[in-house]
Length: 567
Image (cartoon, rainbow, N blue to C red):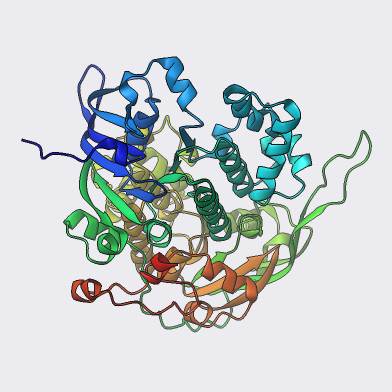
């Protein structure tokens, strides 16, 4: 028999014994999920991909995708059972009652409508305000979320803004209606650390000012430690643990929660530097510019300089992490080094040879010695090819390998990345982490000397990210390739990098060994990046947590657990 439960009216949101399943087959998606959100509270729902977090949130709004049905339980908002409301009543509730910020704002914002029209839609639907008052409120809210020139923003389309700016606009649109509950579904996954902190701080400030409760869905435990008061941990559709954040993150009771905490990137011992007479890659005075936008039929704006007279060295067997905010030029630099983006001036030397001024034969040999791991493996893998065919593709350029030798090399590579039994599957049959392993196997099967890894773990949850980072380190130790690791995730960088290069607006503002940059940052931009990175700091023992011991601040001055929680 279930224990007596507190009255739902005492909570903004009350979820009781929620069950979701696949229609027809009855396969469970969420099972017996119960939790409450208190007025003004910041509650986090955490778990791996596929744990049912997003489905539970969509069930609250009654926006389940086709084929997923609620088979049991109830959802109440301020004591009202949402399951008993008709479609019109739910439409009236979405916005003023419950607002939602989705993971990818470019999907949520209509690309063909102007920002002003999309922001005003909710106010026109749920209020009787005049057009002038709606416009005034939209401009005021855009100013609140720190959008420069809000009047111009209202007339622009979503593609004119960066990911961080689009997420701010989405947040402004939702908070215009002052909802009782805000559901934020992975709102910062694709953002750099500075944009991530700005968006989260704005969300907290707006929620506090309007008395809004927040349900944060995330796999980022750093964000949970910095912003949430309580957390709900889900695994395979079930609630496995709930409680106050210090207890959940410092002294978790359940093995699954401990696995999530243990998967957080941690700094490993620094590798001894490899003594080489000449760096494998030498970049000297590199400049990359993009043509300016059209300013009329025959005129263009001046070119936009993305990389500005930049110098960089990468030694054999070394991992150099390239970090910086969105738009700093990280990806452009990686592509320019591989001759995949045109450079206007400068030299790119590979083993002492300037590959910007070589013939087609030497350029072909250079490209065979270099490989690229893309951010989104699903987009970079041919959906019509099986895993073994994808990994074998780079071997077409090795005529010395016959069919048997190629098959043996592919099998060895798949075995190294833990996919030996999955060679005949298609990409859509794999998880996100498995697809990233395929991308890594394809890049390394030719035994390259140099690899550019462009945000290879940014879209993965913590446990899969930990597996991919460890795999990457093991493969580098075995094969000895040099790596340019492009990332905005400083926690991952801290685990994998030998040296760190910090970029801002196309220039290198700081570089040095990983320990020097993380422990003794010299440039203000580096310090800002480190301060914006949510980290848990040193994990307390259960006894220390019970006594309420505080952790010292991190070396960069950012609060660590539970100092962040007390802020």
